[in-house]
Length: 195
Image (cartoon, rainbow, N blue to C red; front, side, top):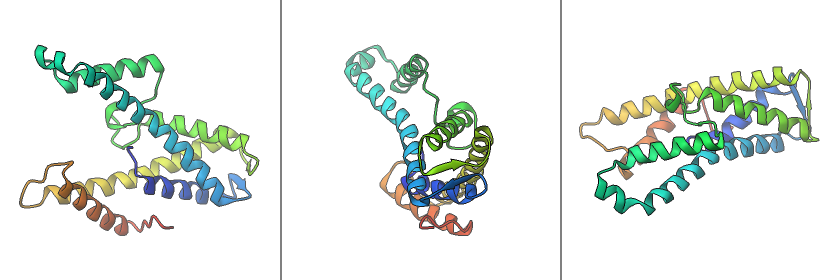
C-alpha cells in the first residue's frame, strides 16, 4: 500500500479533529476515525489487488517474455494501464500522474467523495455544511497532511542516500534505515502516530 496503516490511522484521526464540530458532528469520534481509515484503506487496496493480478498474469507468460526479450517492467506497465482503463480505476500513485505526493489528486478527490457518501449513510454523523464544502475540506486537509508526509519521506530518503556506502532500496538495511529516519523526521514535524 502507498501509505502505511499507521499513517492512514493518523490521517483519519486528524480529519476527525479538524472537521468536528464545525463541519461534521459525530457521536463517536473513534468509530468515525475507524470508518475513515476503512474507506481510505479500501481505496488504496484496489490498486494493490490490480498489481497482484497483473503479476499473476505475467507469471503465466514469463517463458514467452524471456524468449522474445520483452521487458517485464514494460509488460507490467502496459497490462496495468489496460486494466485501469477497462475497469475505470483511479490511479492511487501521485507520481504516476505527475503529482509530487504519494497519492494523486484524482485519488484524493475520489476518496473525499466516498467519505462524504459514507458520512451521509452513517447514523453517527451529521453534516453541518453542504456536502461539497465538506468534501473540499477533506481534500484540503488530506493534501496538507500528505504534503507533510512527503517532506518526511523525502528527508528520510535523503539521509539514506547520504550514507557512505550505497544501500539499495528494498533491501532489509534500507527498510530499517528508512523506518528509523522516517520516525526521526516525523518527530521534527511534531507528528505522533499515537495521537
